[in-house]
Image 1 (cartoon, rainbow, N blue to C red):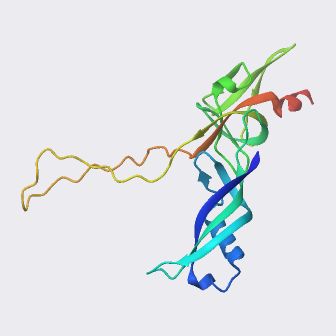
Image 2: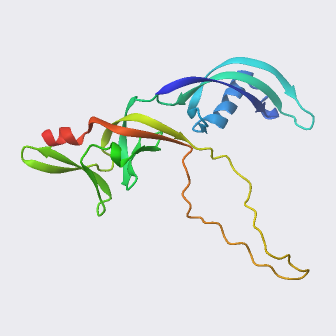
Image 3: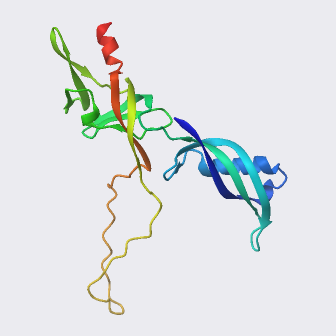
Length: 215
């Protein structure tokens, strides 16, 4: 679930931190920059593990800060495929069951990976499992907050780096003194994509619901 990743970065130390030990100042700056951030194709950075090498520091003209090339190892959340994890149901939607692990929320179990037969209750906005027993089928609801075991089957990284503003084309050039129409406002309802998403499938028995029913 957690791995150590070797990284290299140039760390800027402002002048007011020169009185501190270099290792301490570098560690603080690295955690400010990386902790709780997703690095593309690497995973969710958790915390600095250790610093393996500090190269020479330089002060550039026009900048009173020091710049140091640092080799370090960072603790990263990046589960391997087929790893079994435990989380809690955050909410349900038509897309599937959304799971949280407390520190990481972007986990999706799509409908085809739920225990079958399963169906979505539009009124309650929850998925339910039609559990077969000798007495017939019983609907077991996948309620918010329910503990769940799932197996990691895929991962999706999305590059969320900022892009430049979109350019708009006009059919005719405005004459001097002529008013021009304002560009249409951007669609603020656009769904923001998560930089890192895990895709999973429910493990058997998967839900605490089964143990609850049998108790």
